[in-house]
Amino acid sequence: MGLLRLDEEFEKISEEEIKKILLHIETCRSERIVTGNLDDFINFLKPSSFITQYICTKELDKSKPFLIKLTNVFCLKNINIDELLELIKTNATLELTKVTDWRTTEIPLLSEILDNEKIECHSAEFKEVNKWGYEGEKETYKIMYYGDKVIWISRGVSFDEPQYYIIQKDKVYGIKYNHKKLTIHKNLNSSFEGILGISLDDIITKHELTHFNINSTEIDLSNYFYAKFFYKGMLFGRNWKGEISAIKNINFENGLLKIEIENLTYPHTGYILLELGSNKITGREFHE
Image (cartoon, rainbow, N blue to C red):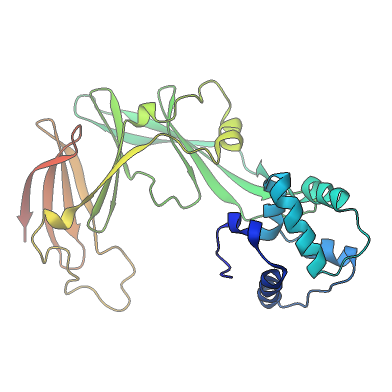
């Protein structure tokens, strides 16, 4: 069984497959797993893993059969499986805990009408802990506000977090660029409805796993630039660690969003004119 198999497939996992996973864990931890003793079994579970969290987070009809198979593999005899399950859930369940105070900064909000519009960015570090003393790595959580509305929530390194926030006709958009790919998040001011009037802490702990109604569109810009625009140029070398291309400038021009892209390895630039409401590119130009 592949170690990255979706956890719902644990429902039909065999004891032989569990043994293979334990061999892999032995290699990763560089220590031998001892069987036949309940205390050793608990000590195996204390460093939080996908095995422990499957037991803690799944419904009884899924977690209990899996735990029975796991205890069989560990050769545990004469145990009360219900009491053991409750012990594990009580002590191994992870809770998200804030470990720093909230910090507030301001991020520019690009507007075609008003200058100096700002997004409020609140950030704090959290980590997952449990009663067995496990502590995960600290991660930075961010909550973005425009006025009294949440427009973005992120955890750690968020690959889809907007680089630019833009407002047009009372709608807030997010723009993200990653070499040739432009992502537009639409109507962020209405995507996070339902979380007004609660604290920053509660937003993170209650909505960490919520899937919000973010409407996103990705545009492949290679369809709008000439073929060699995005090629690696003369400055690119084996030690190059940055992006090949990036947004150089972004601003409004006659109601359209003008996005200037630079190939950092050549370098040369070009821009597109984007109609935000329809996600249509209505113009382009290039400069050597």
